Length: 205
Image 1 (cartoon, rainbow, N blue to C red):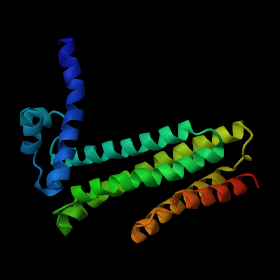
Image 2 (image 1 turned 180 degrees about the vertical axis):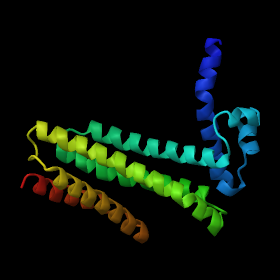
Image 3 (image 1 turned 45 degrees about the vertical axis):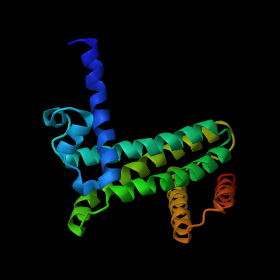
């Protein structure tokens, strides 16, 4: 096998997912077939079947890709921040910003789906949500661990840490939901700053 073939095989799954995502955005999930994806990438259906058994597997993989993109953006913002306080603030602001940026993508993907189809994909979406929360929890644990090493926060018991992360993630989701309902994110920075200050006060209590 040539080096060119190796590179080609490495990038084909990515091409498949990107093509599927663009088709979802244009036509909605319901109307996109394996034939449609194969035509966009200029490959036969057998090339798709080598990586994905059916269009449901492609959908699952696209969802995984989107979640990875979300986590990469949040992680990058947190890594760029300096202190523990700045990292928590960056986490909250970026999580809401990225989630809002992606909302139209998810809405477009579900366009035209009936109740049965939405229900069929609900488990996948729920599983992805759990994976995202697990990844976010891991990132926050790393932030707290780094803060402890720097002497910026007090030591936390495992249950304390888990409870704090649950409260923090739930609060951020609630802020996003309420602001979206009002279609007004003008006070986002002030709100996240206040939440961050409350968390830091508890962490130093």
